[in-house]
Image (cartoon, rainbow, N blue to C red; front, side, top):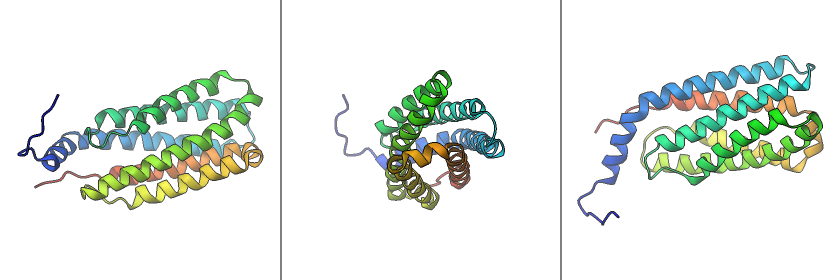
Length: 196
């Protein structure tokens, strides 16, 4: 148990942890952003292809996104750790595995509802993270805020119009993966060390 220490400088501790992990986190974000962008492009290139291909690509995207959320959760300073990140990471991994294993008809309907719920959680987490980062002036939060609003709008579309979202699932998945990857790349490039 930690007792309250009046001399402890929380902001300096957060900045020190940020500076220690920033290069590694930036590299991971860039690699995952490029992979998500590639998967999104493949979803756009093969719209008339077999749904199994899209199913595997979508599953790979979910698994990568789940690994990213888990990695982000464990690399963050304790003040920034959101339990929602851990939950989303685990749910994305489970969804990726389930998408591989489920029959095609069940996958299409289940995936549209699950995507809507995931996107709602992801948008809420991004808004919360942007608020924390803005409070400590750690980075420009505009890309995170734009990505959060876009994510919430897509989530509402998936939840309110499941029939249309099932018919256009591969396009929506591709667009979401591309926009998310671009936002992640912008976020990674705007990360920098804080010198005090």
